[in-house]
Amino acid sequence: MSVAKPARLPARPHFSSGPCAKRPGWSLEALSGAWLGRSHRARGGAGKLAEVIARSRVVLGLPDSHRLAIVPGSDTGAVELALWSLLGSRAVEMLAWESFGQEWVADVTKQLKLEDVRVREADYGALPDLSAVDWTRDVVFAWNGTTSGVRVPDGAWIPEDREGLAICDATSAAFAMDLPWDKLDVVTWSWQKVLGGEGAHGMLALSPRAVARLEAGPAPRPLPKLFRLTKGGRLNETIFEGQTINTPSMLCAEDALDGLIWAEAIGGLQGLMARSRANADVLQGWVDRTPWVANLAQDAATRSTTSVCLKLVDTPADPGRMARLLEEEGAAFDIGGYRNAPPGLRIWCGATVETGDIEALLPWLDWAHDVAAREAEKAS
Image (cartoon, rainbow, N blue to C red; front, side, top):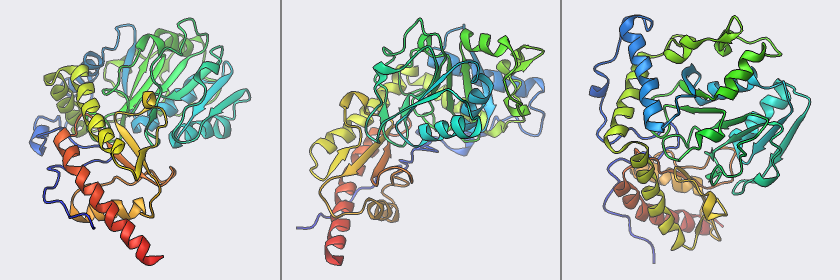
């Protein structure tokens, strides 16, 4: 018997893993206070940018010891800036278990061409052996694998007395997961993930140890202007006060402020994490009772609560066909697995998604699977 098409659509079928859903109730009116047609270095514009930094610091619980800056190029730009500016003075260990981690490996080995680089890899769905990481080296890793749905379980594997820097890509973790700031020296993220902001801008947090590395001497390579964080051998503090390296979009900055103010209103970091957990729990409950699907993350302790990646099990259905069916019906947009990941579905469960929309999506997933499976059987 075929599965009936559901009668109720999600109110907001936006389940993309980036750019992600806007906050509930968002409209263009939220940008009416944007600083437009004026220099971002004028008092009003600089004040807006400084406010983004200040509110981000408060919501995330970033300690006063850490510097925080807005940088160009989204999370990718922030990671690249860190790698090119900080690596080279000691050996490096790269952790990779999904596509973005693999891209950072390629940057370090093929572009920077560092000599002493050790790569620890794992297949999609698993983590490398974190207990084997050598912390005499600088260590580069993602907190949450956006394209695999696998995250590190906590910060217990990072020693306080580490010799190298802990450089963490946290773009799909910041504002949704509890980051141990005392264990992290460099942390990057973008506005377009958990808070549903607009793209093109990244954020970069530096611990005192990272600042000391920057000030110890110039990078062992030429740096383009967009990557330069020091001036006269000292950290350029103005960058961390809102005087961005290049011209930012003040519309995007206003949108980031709107998301941060909303985050504060729902209880800050704890409220954001609770919303993400609730969404992921509802989705995982459906996975647990559905025989043809499984979470790509093999260990429950490492399952993402934001970018939930699913694989199909013992079914002829094509996940790409399922994603297209759901988009055509207006039930879910952009939930196909990442292009370099194993075929599957990827459903964003971050804080800007309403749990009721996840609940409304589930019968549509059952329907799309039924249609895709019957089509595949008919074609075979």
